[in-house]
Image (cartoon, one colour):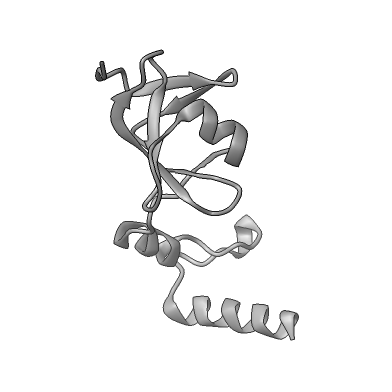
Length: 112
């Protein structure tokens, strides 16, 4: 009988937040199906393949890391409006597209 469990589960001594998407060492993304197996272990699934127990996924494909959240418009705006990375007495009031372009240009020259 499958039952709904809390939004966290333990496997291999680690607590996993089941509301997150988890990435294995091969780059596959695993999400919780909302079910458990007969022992109470959370059942995970990737886009392809059959559902697997969280402990099986961890020991076979792990370690697992939480998938990063997508970059939002607010994140981009915060990066563009942050003060520049200089000494406090040399900082501009606000970063401008021109200062960001200058920083990217200096980084490109370093990598060449």
